[in-house]
Length: 71
Image 1 (cartoon, rainbow, N blue to C red):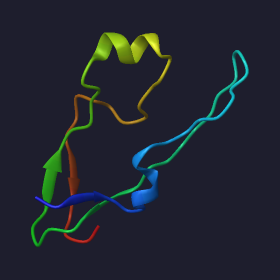
Image 2 (image 1 turned 30 degrees about the horizontal axis):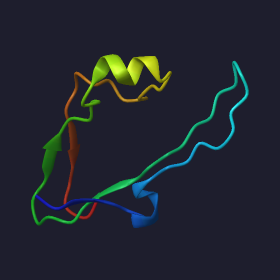
Image 3 (image 1 turned 135 degrees about the vertical axis):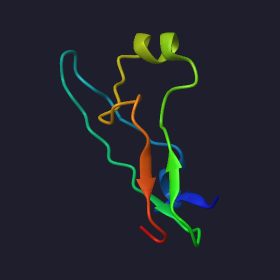
Image 4 (image 1 turned 120 degrees about the vertical axis):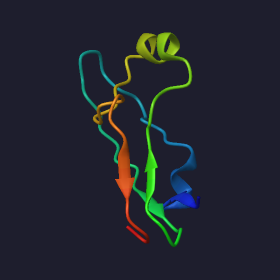
């Protein structure tokens, strides 16, 4: 499986200074560099800590994502 960030500079994403009750959205594209389709799931390693940080994922963490080769 060769799943990479499309832009390696996004390895660490800085949201900058965010005002209270403000929303900031960052899109971090992934690319499948494999010759076959990849099925995977994105979910935080520590859900409790993730929730306390007021971060959300826009993808349903209970659904697998499928990326075709070079998609």
